[in-house]
Amino acid sequence: MSALAVISGCGMMKSSSTSMPDANLVALSTQLRASNEVPPNASQASGTVDAVLNKDSNQLRWKVSYTGLSGPATAAHFHGPAAAGANAGVVLPWAGPVTSPMEGTATLTPAQAAELVAGRWYANIHTAANPGGEIRGQMTVRN
Image 1 (spheres, rainbow, N blue to C red):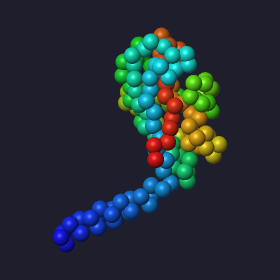
Image 2: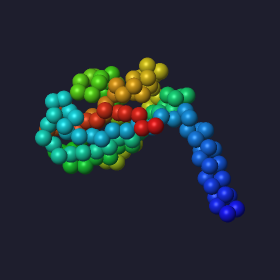
Image 3: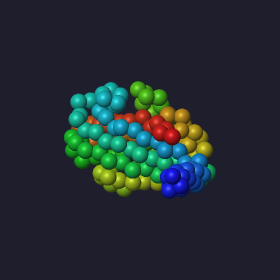
Image 4: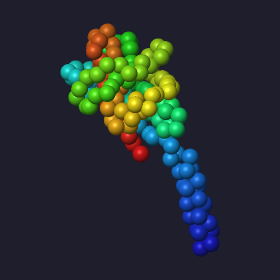
């Protein structure tokens, strides 16, 4: 019984000690699909974007993976501000060649960080066959 109490105590202690530093982090994600494009297209491609925003520094880190594009990605970026189903301009291009997987970081303005957390940014990957975007997903807060 005391071993069980010690194990439970360690688990609770670990949980509370790891949640303290995470209070300033916002986890976001999206599923990239052709059906999310405006207008939708027939691509069978799919992908994911997972991101973390540090609320203190406004630093955004993201990881992207995708598969099944109609050809090489020609561009990829975050767009906003826009609700799901609406188009908007590029707010943050992804640097370097667009490959899968890929990662990036950027420091946002306070207004950009607020728009992102409010769900008003989307991720978009473009190809030659779909220059307006082949797959897209609205960024949403996970935590």
